[in-house]
Image (cartoon, rainbow, N blue to C red; front, top):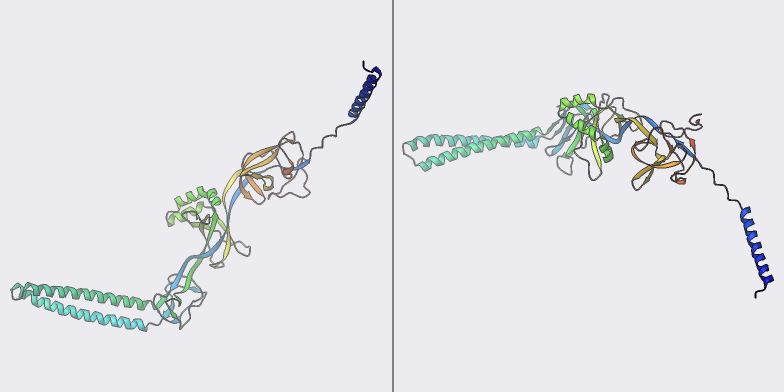
Length: 403
């Protein structure tokens, strides 16, 4: 038989241990849950948002014509002031004409000789033809006389062409301005041999700076944004009259110069490329700006800015609110019960610190402004309102919404 006193002692010990453990468990309290974090939130901005086209460009003359030496020779005279306006047909350069005058004299001598031979051949033919009709000479003699006469006619025509060519080359020794415009610095001085490399061939440029033309490029994404407008413009710009008429419906452009000033005259797009450049991913365009005082000259860098379109009732949020993961964009939206929801959105045009939300967000919702890394779906927060200025920056010491 078991020892009853020993069993009772063991049972008492076990009961004491269980009682102590139960008492300890009842005395321990769970820590309270942490309070919801305070998270800054903003209300989306809703407004009509202009979509700006802004690009870096380079100015050029609306017409830029190189002045070339079309014949070789020594530069004999310069008849303009470098950097000043010139008129159409104004004499600009002369090249030593003596070799070309000699060539004209030689060509005229050849023409005189050819005409003499033509006269002889005609005389021979006129003498042989009646004899051939009387059978006094053979048909072969007549055929030979006809061939010599026709060859003499061809020789005269060739000699006349050589005279004309020599006179044309002589005319190239006097170089005139093809247009009204401004001429630049001369690439050659009097006494230099020109017209053959490595000597100067292009002696100068004459540019029309009124209007001044600006060539600039936009990226492929911008082109896709404005493709519809370009298609409409292409349908209008079919001829010169249509170009002038279409400008009435175009949005004017501003020209911002390198010193930050805005050119006082607005411009319009007049030309653009046929395709996006696959190497650079850019699309080239050209715009003309009136430049009556010639303040802007060719070769300057400038910015072109204009409103391509206006998005009606656009919804904008700060760019810092938007998260991107593998090409998908989302924001944290605060529900009415102050819990957060991760919402997929489609972003659009960027302006200053804001970005247009194309879809996925309503104007009356609240969006988490900062601290998105601390949040998870369904988490409760204490939202603190942040006021934004028109550029999307927080306004310091601004009263909270509803105060």
